[in-house]
Image 1 (tube, helix red, strand yellow):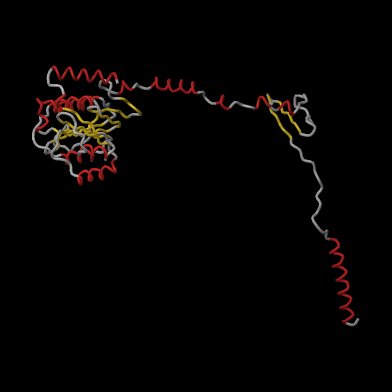
Image 2: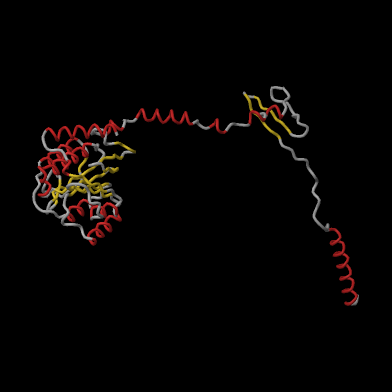
Length: 328
């Protein structure tokens, strides 16, 4: 057979085979047989198993106990599903009762503090003060002037300062800390070991007795230098610093006030100032007013001529002050 005839026959057969192959492949997506899909619920109750199928609302089988069941009957009704969310939460009355029960298990404020009605606990902190100005916190520093001028007016200024200071320390409990700085030209600290570096004391009985002996044994003498004592008190980083002086001179200069303010920006100490003066206050914006205003504190003026004398008069005044504080 000639070669060209053999090639024509071969290609003809190949075309026939390809045509048959292309006709055998289905065009478009294959159609899958449709199947019905349903939901079957299973319930287990006391060893029985029940099957529920959707459709006509009736189960297509029976439970293992042999009793036919209805899907609607197996599910909770609408009234059973709805809940009163307010009723699910504790009422204000029950919450108050819980708080009262908790408070009954905790010691009262009066049991944690000492002093005639001045110290009041609040979340572990205590509020105490001197001469009507008070502060709240855990750590307190008292910077009190003991220069020679505090012995004037028959010793009234120093005697009153001692009484207020000791009463304020009595407000503290053992969880609170304090330090007392009595100063003239130099600061003097209340320390168990006078040669040791000054540190904070605690409001326990031992340190309170130490503080009382330290304060009562102090005499007024010498000149006045405010800055060194205030800076020493600030560096102990108390929550509250009480600063008391009767000195009109020397005053803290504006640069010194600015220096205190800059140092206190990182400490956040509330500096309360108590100014002793003779007669009515002049109302001037002096360095004590500025010191308090610039450091989140309050200023109070005390007329030393109206302070009680020593002895019985001082005792009567202390009892009267104690009674008024209890009443407030």
